[in-house]
Each structure stands twice: as C-alpha cells, then as structure tokens.
Image 1 (cartoon, rainbow, N blue to C red):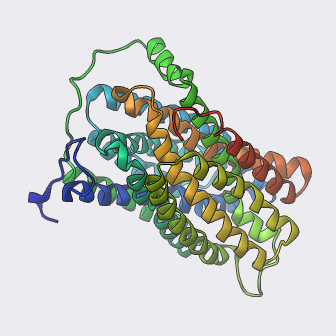
Image 2 (image 1 turned 90 degrees about the vertical axis):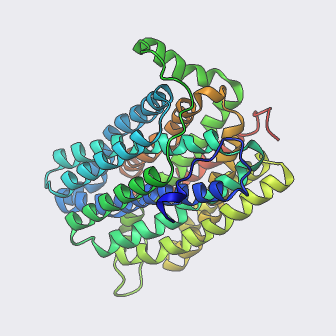
Length: 414
C-alpha cells in the first residue's frame, strides 16, 4: 500500500469496493493490536507481575487492581466516544490513545509494588479505552447496514489473531515483564499510526459546542432508555463477565486447579491453549457473521452461542485435567467467537441515533470493557469465598446463560 492509496470511503460505499476492503483490513489490524494488549497483558503479564509481588495474596491483589481499574475503563470509553463525535474526528483519539497507552505500559513495566502496578494498569485501561471507542465507531460510520455482519466478522477476527499473538508474546516474555510491556506498547502504537496514516478522517459533522457535564451524562444514559439497546447491553455485559471471570484467571487455574503434564509450566500451557481457543473463535466468527447476513437472522446466533458458552463451563468442573482444558478452550472459543461477531452486528442495528454512533457505541463498550476489568474482582471474591476454582466455573456459566436469555426481549432485530 502506498501513500496514494489513502482510504477515504464514503459511508454508503458497498463493501466490495476496494477502498472499503482496505478499511476493513486496517480495522482488523487495529482491533488485533488492541486485543493483543488486553489478552497478553491482562491474562499473562499482569497476573505474573502480581504473583511475583503479592505471593499467596495474588488472587485478592489482582482482583483489587482489576476492580479499581474498571472505573477508569468504563468512564473513559463513552467520554472519549462522545468527544470524538463532537469533534467529528476519529484519528486524533486513536493515535492519542495508543501513544498514551505506550507510555502507560512503559510505566507499568518499571514498577515493583502493588500500588504502582494498580496505578499503571488504571492508566493503561483508560487510554486503551479511548483508543477503542474511536476504532469501534468506524464500523457504524462507514459500513452499510446490509453488510454489518460480514464486516463485524472480519473485524472480529482481531480477537483470535490478537489474542493468540498477545498470549504468545506474553508467554515468551513472562520472565522479563518490562520487555513484554514495551513490546505491547510498540504494537498498539504501530497499529494506530498505520490506521491514522492510511485512513484519513472524513468529518461527519461540524464540531458541536461544549455541553455541560450533566447534559452529557443524561445523554449517555438516554441510550440505555432505548428498549432494544438496553437489552443488548445487558446481554453483552453478562456474557463478557462470565467469559472473562474464568479466562482472566486461567494462568492461576492452570497452576492451582489443573494437573498439567510433567514439565509444562502455566505460561507454556497458556501458549498452547490460546491458539486452540483462537482458531475455534476465528472459524465461528467468520461462519457466524456470514450466515447471519445470509439468513438475516441475528438473535438465534447470539442466543445459542451465549448458551453454549455457559454450558461448556462444566467441563473443567467434571474433568480438571489437561485434556479437559483443551476441550473447554476449543468449545468456549467457538461459542464466544460467534457471539461477539453477530452480537456486534446486532448492536449496530439497535443504536438509538446514527449521529451519536460513537457515543452510543462507547456506552455499549462499557459492557465490553467494564466486565473484562471487573471480572478479576468477581473471580477473586468467588474463589476466596468458596475456596476454589470449581465455583468460579459455575458462576461464569450461569452468567453466560442469563446473558443468552437477555437477548430474547429485543424486538427490532430478528
């Protein structure tokens, strides 16, 4: 791609147009980089760093850090989305959020106390969610409604690709966390530069005047007043919370709950399981997105995949073995990949107002970011209160099953 190939697609351009295909490729890279940071840092580097600092208190300390940082994640996403809407620009928020995340990751890798680790993770979560809000808004900005499922599926491949790359990088740098953090900072900054350079902003509207904070808050909450959007929010939040309550603690689960083959360390086991999960996720992401477009059905894919995600949580309960964990990760990947791909398409169809797409997607992203960061707090509370990881799998499964039921009341989408 040369500088003459700068992508400036019109919102109504068909997805077959080469510029739109190029836009989707850039969005795939941007999302993959984001998920590499979330998965690699959140599931390997951060737990490893906390375990080295806190020892036997690692579960409680990781949960406390996750609970506090959730405030920054959930606040920054819709605020940055609204500011992006008001400015009519996405690229400054993408590039600024990524470069700020690079600084936060560098700081996180340089500290050695629980307090400073918590501060560093809060900074990273806040800046990454500013980046995420602007990147997420590009799909409703520029992709035609009829092809949102396909577009969401292609962009959704960022999770299996980014998750796999992120965990592989993290597992290779688990004994050198400072280097690992710097590598992830370079990954997210590079992706932001690439997207900003080749995908020039197309101003959506003239910048809006400043709005009082109270008015902005009411506007955020007004999105949840829309019936279908509210139920989509609830379903997404429950599904993500159930998933990441378990996945976020998988490093500790592999070390303390599962009997691994001789010589296989938990970080090395993560490097095996993650590609299994992500390969399954990639297949279901593409198949689910394409079939949901072809059949013009969203709810059945979302509901069934959420229910499957809940049911497979019993596998590590009845079989806490290496084989059981492989089966669990494969089936859970199939379920979560299909859910995220089709649910993303569903959400873009129930946005209350097109002109507030980034703001409302930012509100929806609270259901992504909030549960992912709150999940360690929930997991630590369950493990501490009930004395083991078996109750954690059961709680995670129950949350996903209830999330499947939350899809049923949505009326405007089939």
